[in-house]
Length: 340
Image (cartoon, rainbow, N blue to C red):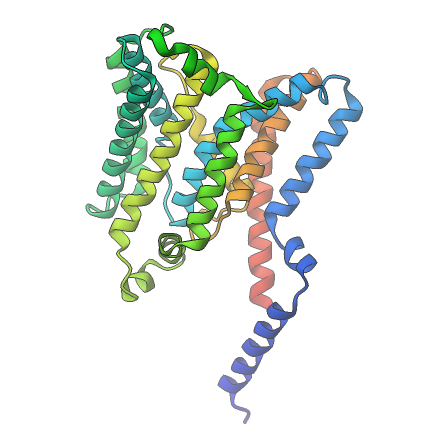
């Protein structure tokens, strides 16, 4: 009788050799982010041919600026999802950050100090989320769903549920940071690129990034290897809150006013962007590039509906369909790999 363990070992070795000998093109074609990027490019080309307004400089400026806010928040969500968690509070944290900064600036505090205060509040919210999840072992869905309501309620209390649109002596700085441009590129887009490079570097070139992937792939194995899983979990929720807080500052500068419904339901769009871009909701997989491309595709879809005169009520249907297709593609790929 043949040695089955030997057969399995030989088969595993053959698979490993096959993966090592795959061409660059083969590896690229196997990435979900590549196909989403291709879909976004095709959509842009099709819209440019079908309409006279999509390819205009003003519309492209608006599209890139609009998806930048979702993209920045998606960077933090990507880190959380890779770790095997979920953060439903990002929209409310964005609102709370923007409101703290708006109220501070309205009281005469400088832009720098107000932004620092807003970021500090965001990090505090992220630390509370992480501590409850990591140390009390409360499910992430429950904790962040509760924080979704708490953070937005805090924004309402601070502002007495009123719009803040006067930002004191430094309001021109705020308006330039969030609504201005540099070399014809919207400042939020530049911020997205910078934050994306930093996040990608942290995930791929630091011990912290390695620990995040390890925790998401197999938490028990990560514990056995000596990784501080609890501290890693706290750090990823703080990072997610940080990205949401930064996006809140930028969006306040773009809108020129802050209301308590800012960022409402944004968490759904952000999660959609990360999943469409290839992040695995079970943890252990995800890329910065994929999440940014996912955010871009969602904004292109929204812009497409507007330019073609289609009701924006269909936006949720298209986004939901892309989510299902993205997850189905990932499941089919996993099934195929398991059959090799």
